[in-house]
Image (tube, rainbow, N blue to C red; front, side, top):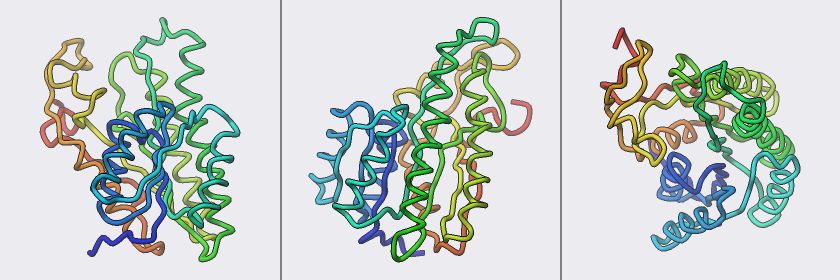
Length: 253
């Protein structure tokens, strides 16, 4: 399938680093105009500069997804400047590593606010734009994580949000049918990013041990998200699991 995103507008939250940045690079390499959204403005600007330095089309925007009005303001500016939104990737996320008995309410609230409420707020505004624009429709892709299926130890808040993202994805996909809005979820395991690379030296296992785990290149995640977004709107990848082949997820380790 030809991957030609010329004329397409893609918004990526958490686009300043890791999986988000890889996704921005993948879209730009196929010709999309990419809005790189990140609470770390300098990180977003660095990714935008890298892309434009390769003759791609990208712009950086400071965005904290816990700001309940920020994404609405941003989408208004993007649609005025670029004409609409074809793709939203909800990639922003955070975690706090605590056992349930040690998890403070403030830490819990922060993870819920970023991973779940932030994804909802961005989805809501993108949905409104996609429903009203001409031609109507668009695609929303949520970063679920393998934790949407199976938790790691000490991940109560993160795992709860990723299970909830599955519900958000399915409900968005259902509500979007009438408006040609497709929504899917990618569940990622052990990509080599600044946050994920620690698994190579040792990751906590369910049996209480700590063991090294294999990683995959983060660029593979960007290409997978781009594949999902490249489908016509009458086809949808509802869920995709992309993982390092030899990581201990399938089977008993």
